[in-house]
Image (cartoon, rainbow, N blue to C red; front, side, top):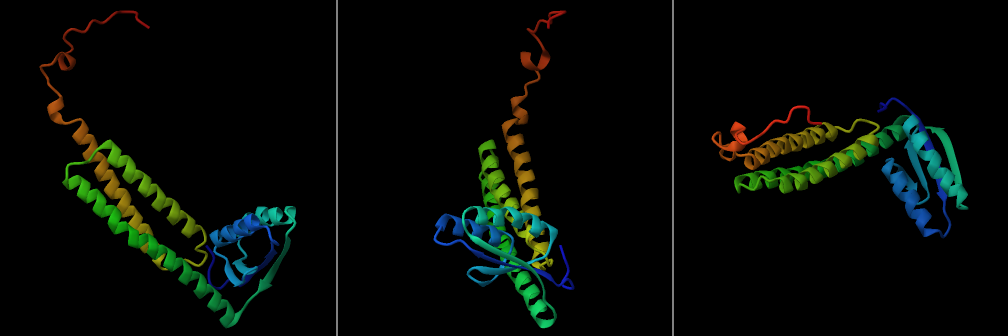
Length: 202
């Protein structure tokens, strides 16, 4: 992550023509990088190594498919720079808050299934898939959080609560599946009665 003192920005102008698929691809990729759009075909991105690396294949694809590209390194100072940084942080804060707002329902679902005695492997898998989506979402936001938006700390803590809750849910499911009553010390399986050891068996 960079700091607000850094003033290097990339100005990216892309024209894709009437190729709808290419236009959608470019829009999605630039949004994923956290682009600030000045116009439908012009945007700004911080001049970061990770951004430069990510832009190369995007711009190469546009050129290969007949589009036009302008990628300029510019310097922005003073209030304009501060306003861009604020816009970036605000956008990331909004995304982080979306993650935070979804966490209570995840935790409530686990609490409800536990209370109902439905801590099972199937339920654990379902909750695990939900957590993976949270983690991928959080990772994507963090990757474009170039100026350390304040809500990131809360979002990461919220997802950690989900991880902790799932760990407890997994333990409950394991205990339910291998209940102590399933182990009978008088049974042949427990005592080894009826079992024959064959020496030299491979």
